[in-house]
Length: 551
Image (cartoon, rainbow, N blue to C red; front, side, top):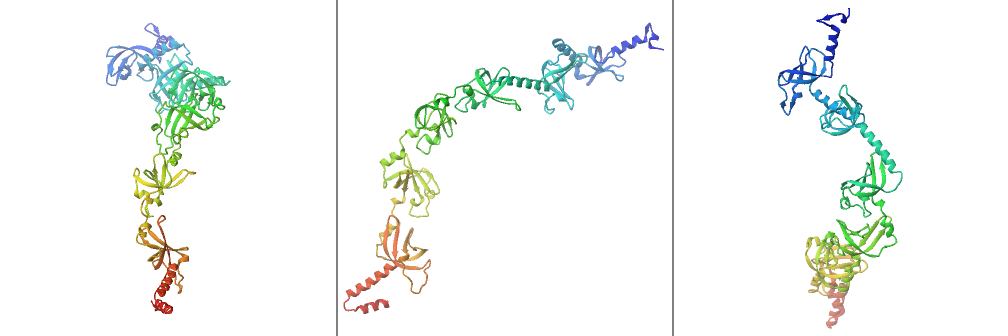
């Protein structure tokens, strides 16, 4: 027996079964009545054996429940397994948006580009993306080109892969959109690079390192080194967004997708034009255009800048900041001291056109002059003393007659001191100074109480191959050369600390030296004996000698 053979109250069973199946088909929108609402969900009567259960969140907007018991509500049947049917009000709203989308883009809206925000991630499955009007799309994980971690909240663009009106579902791909765009970009770039002719573009964005230029849908970067022949410049000082520029394509990095452009390569090269117009030694008028810690850049007025190094600004070696001597916009005359057009290098000098301080100084001063200077720099070997336009060196040996005194221990930077010029080296342009030359040397003080021929007893301080040094006074030693020492008959060697008697033979006040002689003392004593014999006629020579020997 078949179902068709049964009749129930005038209708056959097969007809009722078919009607029942249609009413319970999933994804069907039906109207129901809310029969109960609690804190987490609500029951909706849709004409089946059991009410459908709906999450309260689906009818809540900004914390307010939008329906009450007894209200009619449209829901979509999502499942029919078990006694209680699965229903969704949210899917009804989505279906309306889907229908609108299909009406706008057709039943097969493939390759339509959509925008939206990732609202949820289903691990290892994909992403749920919602457009601004609330339409939801599904993007499989493999089509995301997107990391799952941190994806929620990210705005994306994607292309429609597949759309099913019967299920109101739209599958999108960010991967395909990116790959298609890259393929299209490479085709355009290939067409642009067929020739090396300059191209017209629009400045799209300016950054600190350069600017992006739009070449008809393809963006390229003009690095700040490629804007002017002057070298690195601030792009915003030359252009603004929206300006039309002429560029040349330099290179394309396919792996990174970077297109490099140049503005300066589209212009005549001023360095080539300057090759036959300028040479080292020429004097030119330039404008101060920029400052750096190491000097200033000067503009020749033809898109070329030269470097005026800080060492070439002034003969004063203590220049610390070029702004202390120059101002932006100053017109100055400089001399070309280095020019290499192939390497695009130009160096100029301001000080070379100014009188040389050393030459001026030696015209006005000579060795022996006493000057007042200022301590400019202290070093381990002495101090540099500023004498106005030049510096002179006060070596440690010339700071004091005390050889143990160092300039660092005596002076500090900025001290004013009197010095004497003791040497001028015109070849090396060096000036040697002395402070001790203005003081009495220990030898001068020694001479006040001693003279050549005086007999001195002193202690041996040091022994050298050429003689011995003896201590006379503080900061003053005497030297007895080897040839002036007496040979000891008992052949005993002299040693440091021994007392020795010698006669003064020379006092050098300038060099602070005293020469002594033991041998000359012996001769002097012999002369004294002879003189005493001659003065005393009552004594024979033999008696006089005998008396002296006894003593």
